[in-house]
Length: 360
Image 1 (cartoon, rainbow, N blue to C red):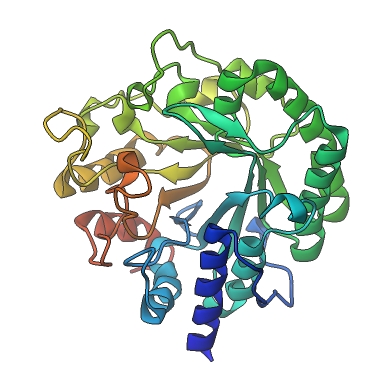
Image 2 (cartoon, rainbow, N blue to C red):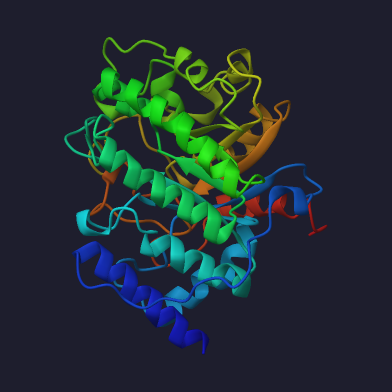
């Protein structure tokens, strides 16, 4: 039965990637746990982001099975980050990946951390939005999607937009329209699922006015004021963070790199993506930027040192297995396992923190 389930999700994801026909998928029969239902001894939740099995995109059924069975090694959460719609025709419907994740959550004992993305990457550092925030009918369909996810699954976490400050950099006026829509959708979600923690996600390096490796950092200014635009409708202040965009060694990351966030928000702080490469960047192998396996492990230690004084909600590492350069060379080696699933030293460091909840 498990192999059959893995085959279903593999086919479903392939169809989504190719724009093919929809595939029947299982759905959850009960609401997922909420953060209030569990209390890890370490004081915050941990997990991994992305449905990336070994050898992706040519993964076998065994690779998919291993992905789900290995999730407890990295924590309680699985980051399910997807476009808010599978196609123009499906606007307003729950994305297939979200349905699939909740279908497997009870069987494999993880908590889905859902983010409904609102743009796709275009040229280096640029974005192409997938929703027009001044189009009231399309915004209504986005609202319907978010509320449907909340009502059907009662999720622990639901993000509206991912790295949303990149949208601001691309289109400040459109961003203001997003904020207005977000407030209404936040209230609608809370009406059907009061315990769901609702937020949007910011990209920390660019929010700080940096992000050298994004290719568009020249003249960029800190934009901490964007947090204030959401008022009390941020249940958490959530960030993606890749300090190697600016620093060539974990030791160079400033001591206040993460604690400085608390100067700009009174919300609990969380990280939906964390990463440091375990190899030189393939696009610039002779530069100082990139990493090694030992450096990646050092960064995991450094990250938890730098966040030890924060009120953390959760920390999620990027990708269970390396995605490879075909998808995005800037992230090809940030995962805790190699492309073939072989563990890296950083996984042991991450697991040591996870095991603080279980005693090893």
